[in-house]
Image (cartoon, rainbow, N blue to C red; front, top):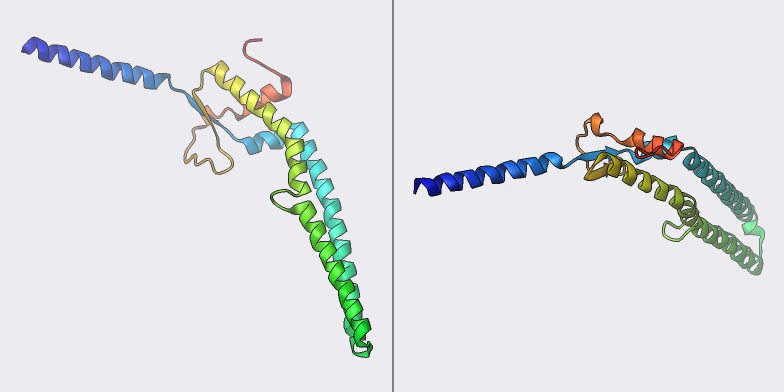
Length: 181
């Protein structure tokens, strides 16, 4: 009986020790993808190009809105002196101006399928893929089991900076440094 209890105790101790050893082998790190994008020259260039494109679209929207406001104000001043047919024609013209404005705005800035979204994806997807490959490379080279992103609401409530892989990933992206080379 004592030998059985001793054997059970030894098995339990070995199981706990094996679990502890396995838990020690688990490495977890994190990166700040916003910092990586902010420091990566090609990402900065892509963002600048997008901002320029969007600035142009916003300028066009501003022109369209100014034209509408000018035409509408002019209509309001002359409305009392217009006959019904002229008034209806001007209202139709104003309605068309407003519709063109709304269509242009939707075409460029619709959050699901607007040109701004598709341009952003087209320009940043290759950069994002490179970043993910660099993260994977750093994680594999240094034996990390998991790498979390500190940005974008990843719910990292605490992170010790010694597990921050952001600068290793940036180094790999900027200089092509790999541990194995």
